[in-house]
Image (cartoon, rainbow, N blue to C red; front, side, top):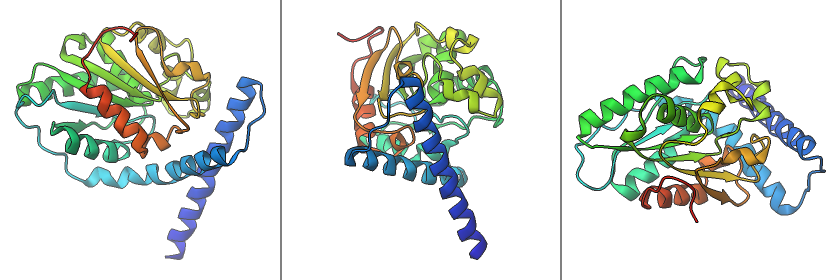
Length: 269
């Protein structure tokens, strides 16, 4: 028990360190001093909780995936893709919410191997799309990607000829134009998230309808304008951090609304 408590304490300290580092980098990039209002402190506390709890969701990988059901007209199946160094457990809350609210099949993939270029994950996602369509009998799927997961989805749509199979893509805190924070990443795929990388260039002008959900409080989007790109519907969340997105009801309801709207390719009016 003592060892477990020490590990949890170390994890909490590491989580806080990563959060404060991100805030410092963002302040330098914006050339301003961080503000410490009660609202901001509350947002950082929620984000710290996200940093602490979300990695623990790795244990949820042991839970069985729901079976893909035949399409019954309630809407296309939903395939969800986690972000950098995360697995399907990180999206468990949002996936459960969408299943209950929509009645649709929701499949959450795991990015394997843990360190690989984004195109490797995108090719495997394309195979998953084919399998879900075959098993469900549906003609299209909806995609939801958090952080790097959104870039994986966009690459599959633009470069794997998956666009006709995807009705809509919803991204959460995805660095559409890259993020400078990726320079600190130690896994192979981090290089693909840098501004100007070939992967980032490949996902511009998405070939399907996209809703890009982002927040000005997201310290991993550097610059913050990277949260969306041309040809997407841009939706900004209020005071929701990068990890907090995975637990926030504001995020959940916004994703649900995006998935139940008519899919229109290009930016909204």
